[in-house]
Structures are given as C-alpha cells and as structure tokens.
Image (tube, rainbow, N blue to C red; front, top):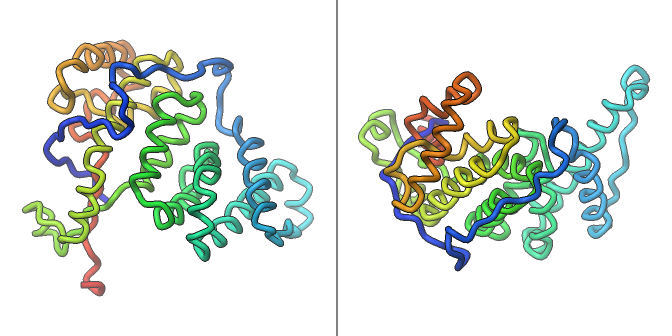
Length: 268
C-alpha cells in the first residue's frame, strides 16, 4: 500500500473536548523501556477474554528443542491465544461488539506490529472504524506511554484504504466510489490523530516513544489550525536537535494517515 496525501481537512472534535485541554499521560518507568514490557499484561487480558468466551484453547505441544526455550514458549502461547480470540470475534461480531472496550484495551497492549491486525480487523467489522479510531486516539492523547506506542502501531491497520482501479486512476486521484466514501467517513479523525501524535511527541521526553509518535504527524503548518503552530514549532525544534533519529520526520512530505492500493487486475 502507498501513502497518499489529500488536502488538509479542518480539525473537528469527535469527543466534545477542546483540543487545548489535552493533557499528557503517565511517563513513569520509561527509562529502560523495550518491547516486551506489556507482554504479561497483554496475555492476562487475552486469558480474561478467552475465559469469558468459554474458549477451549489449549496450549499446543512444541518440539522439545523449542519447548525448552521459555521465551519462545511464551511468545508462541500469546500468538495462539490471540489467534483463538480473533477467530471467535470474526465468527461472532455481535459478541465482539459486546466486548469491544475490553478487546480494544487488549489491542493497545499488543506490541506485535503485524499480528495485532488479528484483533483489530474483527473490531472494525463489529463496531465500525470510527469507534476503533476514536479509542486509539484517546490512548495516544492520555494513555500510558507504552500503550501510546501500541496505539500508533494499531492505527496502521485501522485506516481506510483508498482503492484505485489502475495506476492511471491513482495518478489522477480517482479512487473507487466505495473506498472514497469509507475514507471520508473518518476524514476528521485523521486530523485529530495527527494533532494527538504531535501533542504527545512534544509532551513526551522519551525518544524511543517519540520515534513511534513521529509516524503519526507531519511538520507542516497547513495541516493544523493556528493555535497549533507553536506546538508544531516545538516539535520541529525537538526533531532538529536530533536530526539522525528524526530524519524521516524532518524530511516527511506526507502525513502518513492516508493509504492507497491499486486493485489487482484479476479482481477488477
């Protein structure tokens, strides 16, 4: 999929909250942060959800050369539980809707940048893209830093994809009517997400977290209302003070919140 940039849209407030009222989350305990710190909490939430569903999931046996590696066993076990939960949620969208808040809480503890898709996609079906994205934005806005990173990772899979019938249609910015409608339904949330990532980036003093937050916004004043320009200037100063770490943010010309795909020839 390709990142595409549409015209800037005005910021709107789906939460009934002034954007100037946003506050940062809990920055405690981040000095030695690394992937894996949320693994135990993520598995606990998976266990609670599977118990609620009366799932008959059983940890599969592993060959001895893998079974003796406790780290691998934990990783393999979490993957199995995630997959089992995702299967149930896909088969029972009504149940997924009932458990939405708990499943989304698990999503923002899932550090796997690819496998997290397994839980996000059934939630898009069950409760809609807007509710999922509003939840992720709320975590970026005021959640613990570890979960903010997971929310940014989850955002990728939550996005609408503009579909084009051909490379020529992509060049001339003519997506299919259906994908355009899906994109426009959440256009306001892209602006809210950009602003949330920008604000969190400025308020955070942990560079590894900042690297992930930087994926969600752009250093371009035309994407923000005037009351955000000072905040954007602060973000630019942070990035330029560490140009190697934040080189992609400094060079970025698209905000990364639009995705596009060309429909395969055999699907046209």
